[in-house]
Image (cartoon, rainbow, N blue to C red; front, side, top):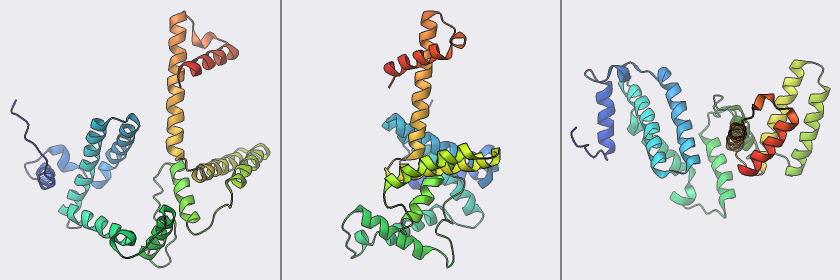
Length: 259
């Protein structure tokens, strides 16, 4: 096998993508469209998140490369349609960053990160079309919990927010009571949504990324349940034959072993 050529040039990457999509390129790459690539873009985003959770630099580097490939493919498809190319993408985000950081690229002075965030929202408002909602640019395809936190951050930026986080926590009890009092399944679903929305608000005020927090809780549960299964195998016990009290005792044992 020939030695690998060192590919460290962005221009070279552009050329590779163009060739893959060219007349003598790869049949799979050539048939892709913006629509067919959507699942891969989402998958690669989640794989980057997984690499961040794992804390492995090499894996993160690899996954960021896979994500960059998706961006390059979308830009190449747009270029072929005469819409824009990757240079336009880079130029657009560069212009946006300069505009939204006048305290770095201009003469504006700021006191702290909080003031930067307020200015950021004001500058974003300037970029919106007249009459466009503050929430219009938040993608509805986001996971629902992350979407909740995002729209709540947007409205909090214009002052539409609770004064104290304790008020939101009190609201949780109210939402739970409304679930109990709901007269039918549809109303229960509505009230449950309100409860989740309020939880997202509490997490935002406590500076907790709700999506990542729930992902972490899911992972802890899976590790602890796997520990329960391993304990049962070691002791020759059928987990499904245990009573709920016995399963709960096993769960507590797993919790002590797996953090």
